[in-house]
Image (cartoon, rainbow, N blue to C red; front, side):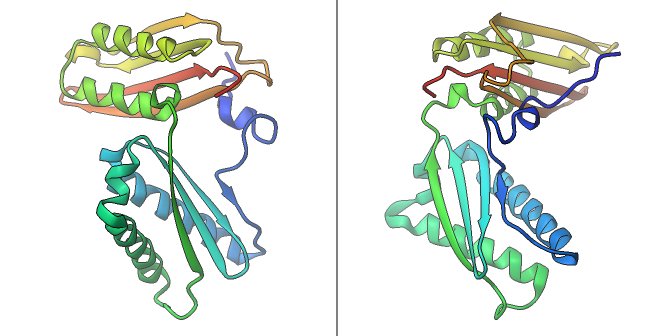
Length: 217
């Protein structure tokens, strides 16, 4: 039986860095881990139309920096930065609701970073594939077009895997599309990976995307 390893986790500290960067002792550690998970889940749901790729959280003694990488930053920032201020209040509200103490809140710095090429981000592409499957678009067409878009953006290789009741079939199966080189065992290779569910009317279809990014991206 094959032993599968998450490509991003395999490369932490070598090719990629951690999405949460801070230090805590004892009982404070589990509190901050849960807090990070709550913030990420809320931001991914709220900013779905903007195409969220990742949320990075960095903490110091009395400050917290939240960096959100999105494909369409204009949707988040809004006219004159109004959307950004509203989002900051939303994050503060999440923390106050959890802790109940506004006085002990750290200073929050919210930053919005644009994703240079959304077609080279595994999470954005996996979400895009999942949304198309939910709209009942032909899975073969979705796989072909998504793979062409990834490779057309300069990727060295890519793989898209679907698993479940694809197209409403009675029996679950797997469909795969792959192009180029995808060396999963090579630490130097910048492999991006994401797994997203497509909640179709027939049931849960898992979508996994691997992208071998070019060296300059």
